[in-house]
Image (tube, rainbow over all chains, first blue to last red):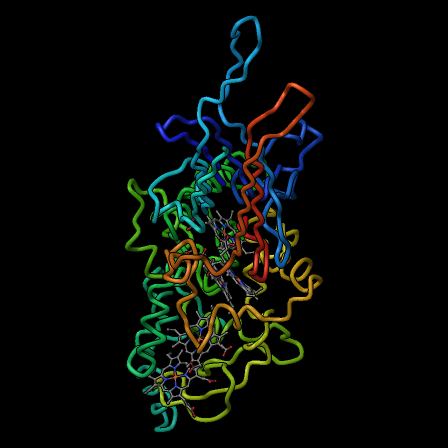
Length: 121
Length: 298
């Protein structure tokens, strides 16, 4: 899932990517540490981390996204200048076949997408 | 030769070369013929067309990753000291392919080692010989015959010439002349063998590919779910099994039926301490998986 925030001038002020998957090792700790993730059905045995979406469960992800600001000196006083009071936050949940995002609709399917416009006064 | 045995012989000649106990295919073409389903199209046209477009029909290739995966597996066999494989093109036997093919092509049990070598040749060709590989796949007879019975001591081996489904009686196909009831056709266990519990510990080279049935058993049912695989994946008898591999229409439809997503955004100025007012947005994304198992699998 990609979460990206942009100000109205198109500047990216926040971005985060989370990957949800079965992360497997080869469970061969006797010859090398089995703390290394592996790919390949003939290699994998067991999981190191299981971060997929569990059936009938809700996963809650929280983000704190700051509006861009800057502290400037004005007449000997520190003043906080908010550089943008509006942002568009894009949230895209994709099903991804390989680690690299490829062509949407071939190796990459958008399962959910929305944009939230947020403003402060 | 008595007249009777002559008739029997004629009958055998007339019958398509279907899976007979003890007989093994010597070529990919013979194996494909043994499990030929082209006749089914004539009467089950809609089911046939759906199946043809499904991931099951191309289980040796899939998105193409099954080719890459198999090459990786063949390379691994070379490095395994006790596998007996130095040159996959020469040394491979049916037994060596079983760790993948038990699920991706269970018909292989009715093939000789020559077929295993032919398959390896198609995989190792550059580019891989997809046309040959796609002659085989998880077809009607895999589910409606060989995998339709899982308790063989209780229910016997699947019989030759029978399609297993929900009914008993005569069946108008030329080679498959009878219908019998499969005890499991409506059950989730019908899909379980291939859709996996985790590593296949029963193999000398255990593999871990699909784990989805394990998730169904250990996560979906405990959470109160009560639908079968067929309820969600074969509504109205559909044989399309849409999924990510074949870009099924269900998957592409927005919003996706697997997930409920709720997004709450709260823009405000947070007073961390007097004099430090931070303008920010608290964003909460709640994602509920409504499917009968983990997503994604494997």
